[in-house]
Image 1 (cartoon, one colour):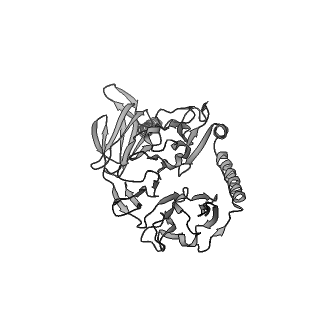
Image 2 (cartoon, rainbow, N blue to C red):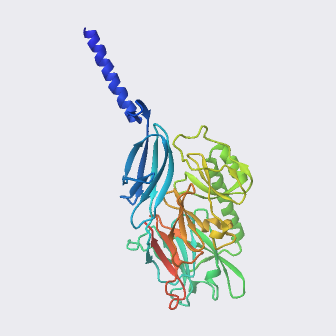
Length: 406
């Protein structure tokens, strides 16, 4: 009798345990079908929070929430008053958790001035968060080259804007706005090329850590310095390529030009230079990987985004007509930027600034106000930096502004 009781108790315990495990894995009792069917979970989040969730057009609640649903195709939408809408199609399978992370942007962005110098030219110091500002307004005390470190807040102990070298400390009659800068591999210094009043090229090596009174002339040795820097860059590029899967490494070195890596280094933007087909590296594909349609047959001259973790390749669907520069692909880093979350790209288009997800979905205009078309940057907290002149009747030159899209 005791043995039977123990067996019954053990069977009951095992049944409860299996029921809990099945429930945790998404199985539910379907009374209509009189069966136990697998379900999946869609977890919906948004930034900012408190967005309204619609699944297949039906209001379901506010973000951040998870929904247990039977397998099938679902259209998930997130909406919030005063912000752009977000939408994604998800194919849900049993026992899987799919995420829908909506990044929403305000319909009316704020605009805040950061300088009042009259900026004639801005040069990005790669992805260091620093900018070189060139001002030439016939003001001897202000004209020169300034360095703006956007990682330093306006009210920090050290101001974000500081002079690098004033024009009066350079040869007379040079044109700051037509200068060229070649950066060192570590982006701590640069060679600045100028043309003087006799159309003679002069070059100076200037470090970015403090103001320079007497710049170091490297006109005669510039070629050897830049050649050494280029060699060092190529060595760094080889190290980066070695971190890629072997098959991708071979294709990367022969068939496309890497433009930029995402901040978290899990994805990169590149331009195909040859016709080639990317063979699957992760086979079979990851179960919960991105479900958007990818393109593995590369067309020369086309931009793509490759996801290293998921082995997914997406074509960036943008056209020449979207940009002001006919040769924009040659300098794509001036027009296509990674957003700090590594999940979005920022496009500096002909008459607006747009943001698109890395898989080519949810493209939306976030700013279409006045700005100089040859400059755009993104702060570490996701705001835009633009060059604009909001009062051209009084101001001869534009200034630096931050656009609050977050």
